[in-house]
Image (cartoon, rainbow, N blue to C red; front, side, top):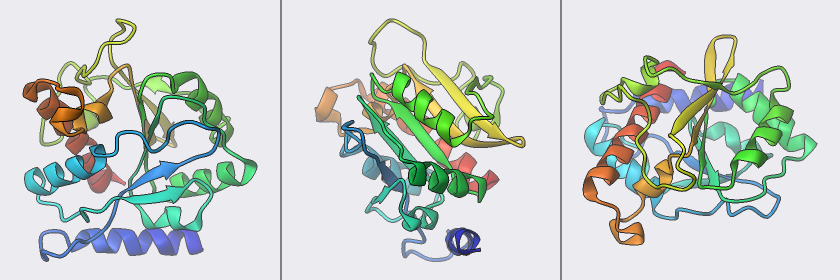
Length: 220
């Protein structure tokens, strides 16, 4: 019951978007064990929040939250972002908590910052042993919110020469986890001087990020 109470409170706050200039809710970065750099891309979420507040007229708090996978505070956030380059390790309690959060209306965006793939697939299989990541078709609504991405995810950085792919975990038809791979979406949200990416690429990354937020807030 507590799970649903937290999420109900969060989504009731979202309803106030557009009626108040005060921040209505927060989004958070997921902190995990295993030694991976969960704290990577320090400017990415703040920049995405500013962009979304401007373009989508949301009123997300400019201060991102940080939340442990196993914390009850996870349920305070309608959207949680996870990134990193290395190892990820979910304990049994982490697995149970994250599963309950996602089944109760929460949403996880995982962004591979290069090197995360083999770890996140293993750990998310613990959370949803009955599900597999499936590639999301370009016709899916997540690619067609305020901004249209008819060819799927933008490519921010090259690593192995692979095309960017968006994978999803669907539980009873609902997308509960969106995994952006070979894309470096979060790098594109960073301050320009961090990677010196062309502004056009940064804007495309921010637009796709805004689409993800728009999809989550409108469909979950």
